[in-house]
Every structure is written in structure tokens, then in C-alpha cells.
Image 1 (tube, rainbow, N blue to C red):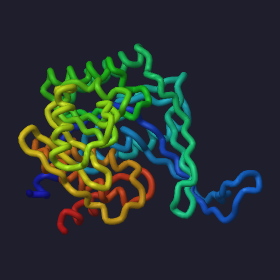
Image 2: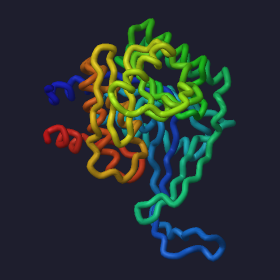
Image 3: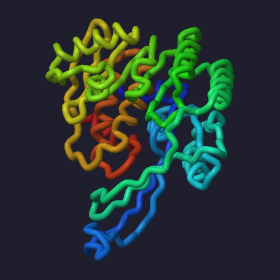
Image 4: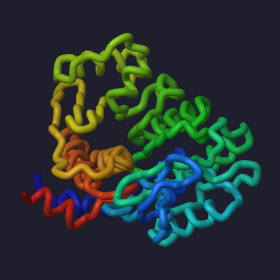
Length: 326
């Protein structure tokens, strides 16, 4: 495993990401007393922080390793949409595929934090599927991107916020397959069985239970996870399976090789965004190496690092390199 060689190859990988983006807002302060109005803590606000969430966080994680990242999604015509675009543009993400919609707010996740703990979360969103016109507009932009940029890999990042409709999913994967571009899917339950014929299907363990309507949870071992791979493949006809197992690590199945890679997290502070890091690094290093085990190994290291951070995080390149040297 030559890390320097892989990092150099990754720099030139072109990655397209399509899915739900959101603004993660953190109100951080201290709680010293209980409110007289209700049995809840009063948080004295110190700072406000904006971070890119969802597929936007995936894009930022990819940008750590690759120079050419393009994002396709929707935002509202509002301050949160502007703030989100500012974050992405500052990091050099291609945002030309992001469509502004006046009748739909930018998805916001407002987290109120005190003493490093989340007190509550307030969501502002519309999760209905985008309409057919917006769907068509995204597809046109995506087709132009495929023809003009010839990306190395495409990520479909689904948070059930309405961007990835069943029709759009089918059209995107079909177009990628026609152009021999591998796809990585990070699904959610509503569209779980819509992702037919992808290259890498990457659910977490709980999503498989729900997506396949299993009556009970199987044990987490290589044999049972291989059986889940087989069950998924019968439904989805994809090529490769990667299953994230929370604190137990990552399982991969290439059709020939299969293995559980134990977690590398030493200090879990917050799992927010860890799945984003996994799919980002999985895509970057699979495109660079076409080696699923290697890509999963790197993704597992990255996830372990961001779990040590509070809130939605982007993997730190120096920390990542140091972790691989240990």
C-alpha cells in the first residue's frame, strides 16, 4: 500500500455528487440553570457556527483529497442557501449544478449545544420530492457535466429530503452505466430499492433491516453480512456492497472477497457526518485504485477521525496521514 502514490492519484480524480444538501447551524453556549417556564436548561449563547451538511459535507470531505468536485442539488432562495453556497464556493466546490427554488426553503438543522452536549435540534425543511421541472433541470445540468467533464465516479447521497426522486435515480445510474462511470450509493429507506444497477451500494446496518423489511436483526458477523449482501444483490443487481456497522466498523463484499474491518475510532465524541466521510473516502480511493478493500480501509480510518470531533466535520488530511502511519 503506497499512501503517497494513492494521494497523488486521488488529486486528479473528478467526482460528481448528487443529493440532498443542508446547512448545519450550531448555537453553542453554556447551561447554568433551569428555565422557570419549563423543565429545560437555559443556554447562554456564545457562538454561532454554520457548516455544510448532507451531500455538501460529502463534497467537502472529497475536496480534502481531490481537486475537482461538482455538486448537484437544490436550495431555497434564502439566507441559509446563500450561506451554504458561500461555504462551498470558498472551498472550490463546483456549485453550478445547484438549483435555487423560491418555493422551497434550504434545509436547516439547528443544533443547540451546551458543555459539548446537544440540548435540542430544530429542523426547517420540506422533504417532498422536487417537481418534474426541477428534476429535468438537474438532469440536464448533470448530462452536460458528464459530457464535458467525464468524471471518474459519481456519488448519490440520499437523506430523504426530496432531491433524489425514483425517476432521477434511475436516469442518473443509467447515464453513468452507459458512460462506464462507477456509482456509489448512500441510501435512505424511502428510496432504498430504487437504486438498481449501481456499482457500490453503501447502506448502514439498520437501513438494510428496514429496507429489506427483515423481521429480526441478524448477528453481526461475516457469514450473516455475506447473506445480507446476497439478499441485496437479488433486489438491486449492484456490483459491490459496503455496510457501515457503527462502532463495529465496516463490512465489504466484492463478490469474491469479504471482510469486516474493525472501527479505528479511539474517542467517539459525535457520529454526525461520519457516514458522509465514509462515502466520500470510499468514492475517492475506489476511483483512484479500483481496490474495494483499500478504499474501505481508508474510509474506516477517516470515519474514526471525524467521530472524535464535535458536530459535522471534514476529515483533516494531516491527521489522516498520521493515523495511517501508526
